[in-house]
Length: 152
Image (cartoon, rainbow, N blue to C red; front, side, top):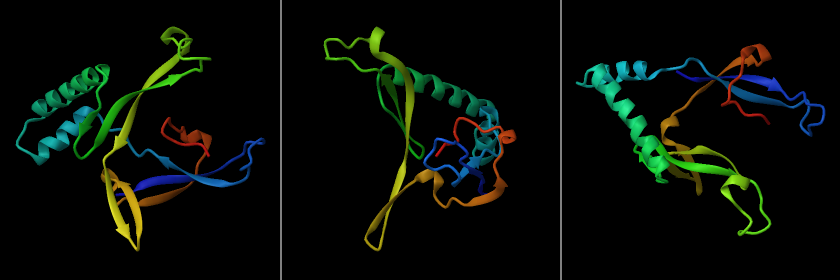
């Protein structure tokens, strides 16, 4: 298995990187909670319905903990916390939720593995250990893109 990617060229006229080439990952498939439950069922003694119930409860508990302002760590995956976007205020007294809060989001930090080789430390997301990439050609607008792709 490998993560697929396509190449694309920066064609923005005002960009300092116009004409340069970049890579963008391509999502191979979307996997649902039900499909995850099926795979887990195959690897353990729990029934799919039990796994699905646990995953749904995990979702509810994760939301509850985040709304309480907690960081949630799931071993082997990483941690989740609430982040916020804020507009400026001239002073702390002038800052208010109604005026300056622009939005909230979830910050995910993957569990990492540190390795040291020749005196250089490398940090890798544990879930991406042994990752391989495969080129699929050039990216086009008809590929659809998604929110996870990154612009240069």
